[in-house]
Length: 148
Image (cartoon, rainbow, N blue to C red):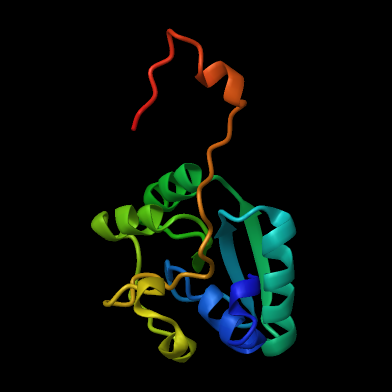
């Protein structure tokens, strides 16, 4: 989130909650979400959203695969308004399955193109690198072949 410090809290929160719109809210003043982000990261974003809008966010934390499977299973009767966080591949798969409504938040206008889908299917909230780490010693055993 540090890389977004110049965008401002409202911009980030607005774009963040536009990750993927599953369906319109059932109850005014309440937003239901599945969060792929861990609770310790998602909760402060949802709290900031609630402080800025007055809309309460109720969320369940799921892995990306679980969240996408659940949204797909609930397609006929959606239970959430937003799928929040997670890798772009999750949202791309959901778009391919017809699970998300397009939405282009005004705040997304200040984001670089790589942080949003051109058709409004998703808006990125972070640029998290994937890192693989290992102890050096096991990699250099003769029977382990390294990719180059």
